Length: 182
View (cartoon, rainbow, N blue to C red):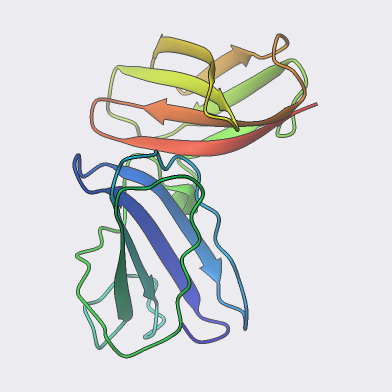
């Protein structure tokens, strides 16, 4: 992407086809995108595009510039370096999913939190959601299956202060969000 362009990145599990995370940012001369939820031993496609024609949607190259990086057999924290090139590919990127941060379909607040955290969701068409909270070592610290309503309340007073990952799963999608507990 060129400096100042919107960059949209999606990490997809190659085996299940499930989206692990979706991130949008504005490109600067040097920037980094952190992705949480990648698991050891799994393989992923990292699909991303620059909204070159500035219409807010993904259009196949050359209208937009799109790339795919492959991350196979993950063995711990991984850094991928990318330098703009003209080896564009059609990533078949779909603009909306159950958990689309750009359209504010999922809101987690307060964040940072002390005792309780609320998850609000709009336009969700499933009946149940699995909520899991992991510490940064990957250890499961909290898990529940909740009937899906517009607002879910989680009691986190028993968690130690630190950074956690909230994993939201339905039967067809999942997304991770960072939570800071203090």
